[in-house]
Length: 200
Image (cartoon, rainbow, N blue to C red; front, side, top):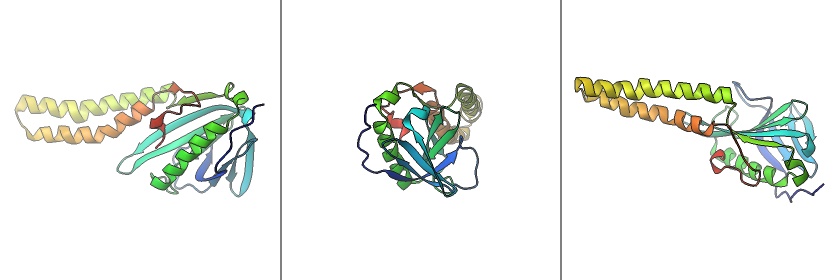
């Protein structure tokens, strides 16, 4: 087995969750670390570790929190079906500039230290599942029709230019949806080339 690259910082102060993150009031478990053998984390005061060979898939997602900013999630699926999610969000689920930087450092180190022998057996993907992405795309199309196309049509039909302001406001409203849909498109990537737009 090829030895992993040197790790400049073993521990990262990021919140972690078992499974895929959904709605939670707040994040409570903090701490993920990398070692020569694999990845480790802390849940409810207990330490857990998994060998690199146990990782089946890595999925990167970046979401844009309205009026707040970007937030990243690195979802690691193990061969027994269990999932670890590493988050860049704050304790209350908000975008956090300092944690985004720490998360970016984690992503870079994490992908660099995975041994070559393990990389060939891991699926590296970005974005949401196909079904989720289709649903998000449908929501985006409906939002465009309701907040942009309809006001623009009313502006042209009634020659009421006030409706044009609604169009511009609507464009600002749906812009985050556009970026979420674009970043949420399922795609594969190589661990040596982590997509830059998946660093929040």
